[in-house]
Length: 297
Ligand code: GUN
Image: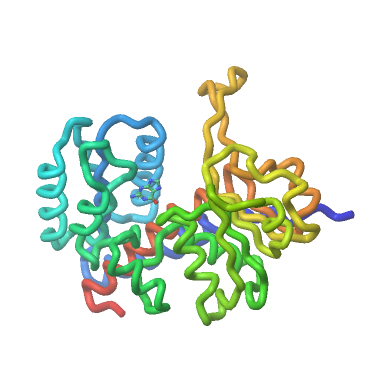
């Protein structure tokens, strides 16, 4: 039997970044301006620090102006809202990303609600989430957007398919469900969302033509949970201790890749699957915001 298609998110993200880099150069010649993204990070969470460093590097690569505002762990909600307000008013900033999770003393909803809807490149603002749900053009949150792009790139049709999503987060589970159920070329799927209170998850996942795991539990999806020929998308990025690894840990997904790959027709690896696409789509959203702000579309 031939092995599954390994869905290469690194390769597609590189291709997208090349296109964005070229467009950015052209816009710079045309307008003298480049898209600007500001990332705000609070505290010292190691995973968040890594993600933010990757976002900054990607911005530099494509020629965006980017900055990272690092706030101390005991920043108050008022201070953070003040910072967001300044960024909302700064014409050089097209995208604002406040890295989540936030410290316990800060209300995440309040912060997201105060990010300008025109600069909400994460697509987390309730106004943009609402537009996504009713199928109107908006900033699509980056991970679900990246998954849709991967399915498109690999010619994986979603029409009439049963997509089972494990995880109901606002960042991934809910928006990918909304996208896959839309009446659109990349939608028209029948969608089931499973979560921590779902009874008999394996029974549902075994019915999936497209299985999306987004729960943050290492190797949660085992071979017996997957139908032969399913497309498996692994959103998990979990650190597990590994003394033999240079950094003392390695990254694993929510899917037991080695076991599941023999059943799947196509599967995303971790790392190198969905992860790089999230960053590429953040750049795409920032470019979109820049174009809108400068009447370039
Ligand atoms: N934390 C983990 N993923 C994300 C993301 O996509 N955006 C933000 N702002 N924070 C995150």
